[in-house]
Length: 363
Ligand SMILES: Cc1cc2nc3c(=O)[nH]c(=O)nc-3n(C[C@H](O)[C@H](O)[C@H](O)COP(=O)(O)O)c2cc1C
Figure 1 (cartoon, protein in one colour):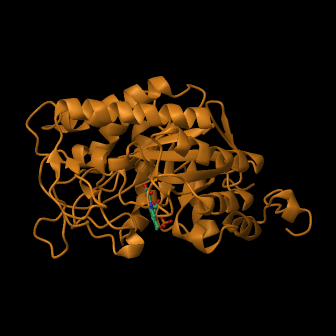
Figure 2 (cartoon, rainbow, N blue to C red):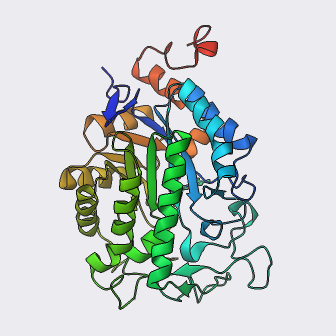
């Protein structure tokens, strides 16, 4: 009996298997609004038989995007474009997830497809960026990294309300799983990590102070997000740099998140500073092991992500209780029918995996 294909229930949400699509920026939105590309990208992976399809990091405000092509959820026009995509995912039995985020000091950049550099200060396509302090992501680097404006406490409160607003819109659209993005050096992670947050007020200092922005945000989002649906937080569980966040820190943060009603932790890593390689860098493969440690130490379910490509590897992560769901990023780009590939490799009945339009004829 494959553990990977064993259903999972969290609150009122049933996952038909443990395979999920990791959130991946598509740089294909217009003023944050999803396009046909999103229907095809997300829809085809639902057709491919995964249990969970998670939409890319979706900004809570226009200035919370990473680039102009990034997704957003701050108005009705965004909700209207996402609704048919979520409905389609549901028609094909996939749990619909969305990651809400604020880019912080990494915003106002060109899309990754166009090099990902920060836009020049006088570029009308750019905007003012914000962070815990006014230190740029890489002040000494060869690439341009703009200096952010240090957020005031009132501005922090405003951004928290933007998270709540996006959560309410996501609820109305019909999403089953909401993920708060606190990884990869974006705003909430930049407050959490001592590598970036040098504030001396209540939102800085020790771990509790640095976690305040995240924890308050999650508390407010949980109050707005139905109890029977799933609330996730993506953490960079390790900063991969000396003096950065450790697994012990992330365990403590995980316990605080558990107290605030978070249902599952999505365990990614890195991205806070240039030396901490990015989300798809060369230490990604260590993350599933770390998801297991976080699962054991917090008692919360986890999602494991990072260089998972092989069905046996995925099966073993679930079977050895490192995670409750495995997420695939890049491999899902290569093979939208990876669930079928895995079922074949693990000797699981392939017929129910595909949409009936395909599954009736092929397996
Ligand atoms: C094109 C691309 C876009 C990504 N965008 C996001 C994102 O929006 N939010 C996020 O948390 N991670 C993002 N990531 C990281 C992935 O979700 C995933 O954690 C990472 O790729 C490692 O998994 P993999 O080895 O299966 O690709 C992105 C990765 C890629 C390749």
